[in-house]
Length: 235
Image (tube, rainbow, N blue to C red; front, side, top):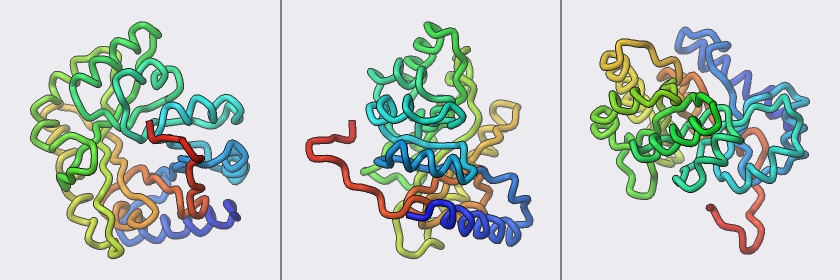
């Protein structure tokens, strides 16, 4: 596992994708998707120059974050259950997976108790996959103004996960539609939304060409993800 070499290669690929799109590479944040990775792997990535990490499970994050250096910045990128909101508010600097008004309201309550304001992204299931979480686009637009009224949450943008395909180009319509949805949200809110979190190890270059400001890279950075221990769940 040569994280530093992988990171160098990924930054080169990000720069090349940005050049194709006429973008500044500094406009794209590389997030290390650290699900099932050890604190040691996180330290190695930190020493290589990364500071932004994404976790998919609250329970795993509760164990992993405390032994890691404090300069790491953690975001929630997996599905969040309402009963985990208190812990999520304590652990993360951003939550990327807000997918319902009810969840947002519970996050707002927990943020109020903690006297904290939480930046959030709204997760949109652009492709309508039954196996994935996220707002349907129309439902997200319908609830946007109510979401924006929650005083402890700051909507910074949108997030999506494209359907898996061995052909990355097939993800382009999904990423393009999320960018269009961001524009529709900005019109409704009368304010810019700076973040588009889209693109993973298999398709991040297409996402960058379509406007991604944050790409979530796990396998391409760390190598094949370690398997969960026996008895461990996704909760």
